[in-house]
Amino acid sequence: MTVVVHEQLVLMLEIQDLTAKRRELESEVGMGAMEVSQFGIDLDEARDALTRKVEELEGGLDDRTRRRYDRISGRMDRVVVPVINDTCYGCYVQVAAATAGEQDPNAELQTCENCGRFLYFPTG
Ligand SMILES: [Zn+2]
Image (tube, rainbow, N blue to C red; front, side, top):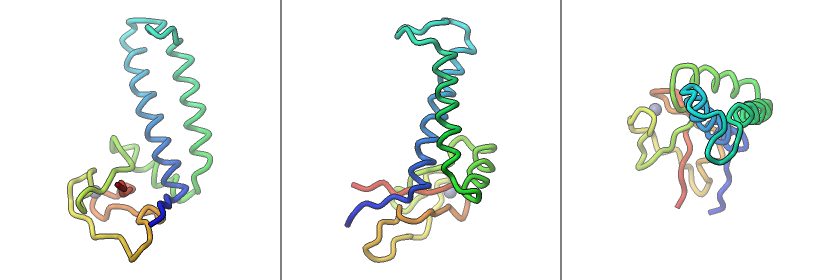
């Protein structure tokens, strides 16, 4: 089976990853402990770079997906969650097996009927 991941899903996973990194940076900036991290990175600058990257990626989402993404991210920590053993790892409710035949379930955008999060299916 070839692994085909929906382009919008890839984007959202990247956005989620970068947003989490930015949040970490912000908590460091918020503590005011160091202006320059131990790696010699200016935290403000790094945060701005992440913000720009996130905005760029968000521009690649179609309107419908983006509205849904924004809605979920406003009230939940994670927008895209894995499905493991048929369980949504956002709300831990069983989700219907979404696979139809040989097709990679990640080829389509799927959402949890219970919590509304986007789902991805780790392979391997
Ligand atoms: Zn769920």
